[in-house]
Image (cartoon, rainbow, N blue to C red; front, side, top):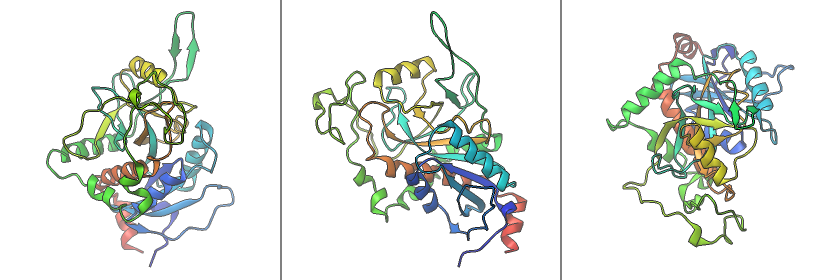
Length: 316
């Protein structure tokens, strides 16, 4: 039987942009809680529950509303309604940037991590154009220290054989839509070759595919690198590679989130569902939404719940 807690009992905000991401997040809950009475001034709809002892509020952007402004509005309202939130997670899907150094594949996860002058995420399309180049201006906030400390702990668990990522991903195997087999093959085309036709590149020339070195083990890998944000979906391999090089080797492009970072201190977790080129399709979205959600659960596992959260659990 589900329980009903108070608004102030929720300490983690989990934001999604798409329904598939919301579904994956809901499946990671250890317990689902009853809905609270809606505030007339709050247009968000929330999914409530607990993960690893943390009381979590999950919210998805309104259908068809993507981009900076809707994301910022949803995050701001969430913080206003749930004043006990300590930190946030932005969990979902993004486009990957293939490179020999990064060895990123579909299904992998990229976690935002500060690097050089960047706080973990950078918006590539904000700045001014001069005669010689485009100058990017401004910076986005780094994730809270508690989340970066948790990232370090998750990283340390991996070589010790204590990672639970595969276990949490397998939790979704009972739902056919989330299964890895439903996603199909992992196909990467040359950066300069544009999509020719078909929902899954049926009309594209197979001779233009890039050979990818087989991995020793078929497992989801987690990469810790800068994630770059923009107001438009990245759909061009050449532009993708150029921007990645200019920004020091980013591994993931994402929209929806730049408006969040200065309004909602959070860590960004992205499952790679395409290669940010003209061959984008939706076949990998469900599986990779699941891999990202599974990492978020593993992250929460290494963060002890607050005294306030433990007290709330005992009193209900």
